[in-house]
Amino acid sequence: MKKVYLDHNATTPLDPRVFEAMKPYFTDVYGNPSSPHHYGRLAKQALEESRAVVAEAIGAKPEEIIFTSGGTESDNLALRGIAYHKERGHIITASIEHHAVLKTCKDLENDGFSVTYLSVDREGRVDPDEVRRSIRKNTILVSIMYANNETGVIEPIAEIGRIAREWGIPFHSDAVQALGKIEVNVEKLGVDLLSLSAHKIYGPKGIGALFVKDGVRLSPLTTGGSHELGMRAGTENIPAIVGFAKALKIADGEIATYHTKVLRLRDKLESDLLNNLSQVTIHSAKAERLPHTSCIGFASVEAESILLHLDLKGIAASSGSACTTGEPEPSHVLLAMNVPIELAQGSIRISLGKENTKEEIDYTISVLEQTITQLRTISSQWAVEGNKRYNLT
Ligand code: PLP
Image 1 (cartoon, rainbow, N blue to C red):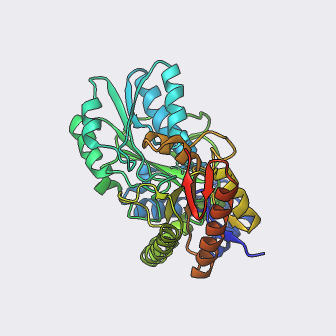
Image 2 (image 1 turned 30 degrees about the horizontal axis):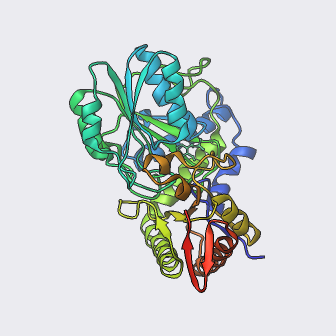
């Protein structure tokens, strides 16, 4: 059976070049980077070289990079780190954020912080003026993601960054999905904190970073040794860190070809589905989006049934964020965009990768067309009257 992986926003395969770069750090260079002997010094050298690579890729200084276990931890460290340092105050975020931000904010509310969850327009965009209007005297943090994991929508981060800077409020952005897909430069974006993760860019899982601008004060979440500039106690995962730096270098070097390739494939996918099926909605089609993400709604079918059928044909896609897959609730992102609940429930996410081919996309289009037609035929919501089909809901 053909196998087609179209769930790159959930995770990506490890690039073989990354694996090669990591290998010696499992076998030969296994020292603890905090040890002063030569085993430790070699590990420390790899750690600092990797830090410099990550810093350079986003226009930061090496001492502004803290390695973490991934995007979730980086988001937690940014939000809780600022909040616990201030002890009280108000946070502004958006209703379309990843759960790593949203659930952390909910937790902070339980701890006595107040949070404003900004709404978005129908395309899923945050309005910078709304950010400005929501600022209070006691606002301690603004946190708005750079690109959404479900729709691929790119938020106006530089504009929000200017507003936050004007008011002297620290600004965090979750750039986990943007990294390696579009330019991520902390200076241009005007961010004080930025979350990154390696496994979305063909790097290993369980490693990420938080950019913390010089002078921004955070409370660490783990205590112990003085690793990572005192911000994250715990022996660093050197093979993973080396892999992250290698993945980022590769992504940086290939970004232009990647962009052209996945955009061409996505355009084909979306236009064929729109042309060949009725009642298809490409969510956020009018917004600026990441080139590889497509969130597609099919009226009168359940996303879970579509995904099951695709899986039986060897195609892996998802319904929104991987973290919510398995939960019957429709995507909080689509609901925040005022997508009707039935359409949200019939929406799937296809996220392309650099290894996908035109043949794979042609195959996916044909399987999707058959699947949707078949599911609609058996759906009780659909009536057939002669050769005219219409939706009863
Ligand atoms: N933030 C966003 C926008 C994501 O898409 C994800 C992963 O899906 C995360 C954070 C969590 O990253 P990690 O899996 O590295 O913890």
